[in-house]
Image 1 (cartoon, rainbow, N blue to C red):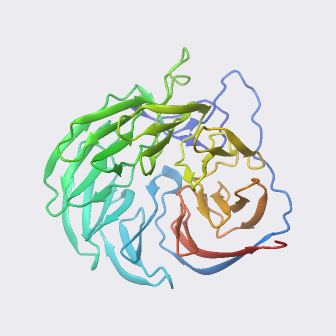
Image 2 (tube, rainbow, N blue to C red):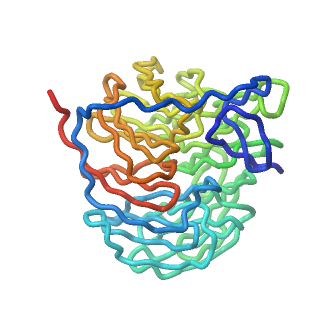
Length: 390
């Protein structure tokens, strides 16, 4: 099975097993450069609180190594095997554990467990308070999405289209769900999420499937994107982003497909809009924010999918997943910049550059602070103030 990934250029065709261009047009001779950043007079005060470096980043492999905040600790992981618990207030390590494995996904955290995945299909569980390893089991293939840790289960999505439920204390297999994988797909998988009694994940077939958490039975499935076109490249329709859950509603987006609103009790699609993305969207009370595969940031009205605004000033800059903090939407790019956009208008209000490495992972927001990790393993915390002139 060939596994592909989006590249920065987003305009040339597949050249190797580990290169994919988002929005590829093989008849196109030229490649448009990334949008140049215009000078910005900040309208929002942004202060760096702290920063720290883990090293061992996965920049070249597009690994799913990010941040998770749980039980008052900020957990992160590095490609070289290190898992670290940080104090969110200071950035100082509370503990650090060397798993001696090539990590590719995570961490996921919940209750007393922190879990990570590896390139050779290992799932490693650590004690959340001490970092001591609890168990290590091997699933069917590489893990490229953060495990879901919930109650007495660790739910893991592997790249071969399987969803594995493991006992949180022992790692013993409880059940496995599966969806066939097309011959060609993006490098990446949808992180599973919990919606009441179901575990929901997107698949490379363009479907979102809800599995009953207790036994793995399929509760419902919804077709988010439908493969179309003559070539395998044109028929890519992966749902590689986590479904965003809020109450009874879910929001999912697919590559070369649609963004949809789902009823979480039945999988019914309430509305859909053509849009392509391989990054998890962000939500606030009224709007959904999406980084598109060609580098736009789009705000959609949650109740009906109407476009509220679209910011095209970051085209072809390989955007990461957005996050909402205060009255701003924050998104990183391939050159290590963070961009703050006004939630009401989409206008740029601030910009920072914590480092020179791509920012792919979705920032974490808590207590008025923004926590960001770049693909090289640098973690930075910011606080943003009131918008100037208001």
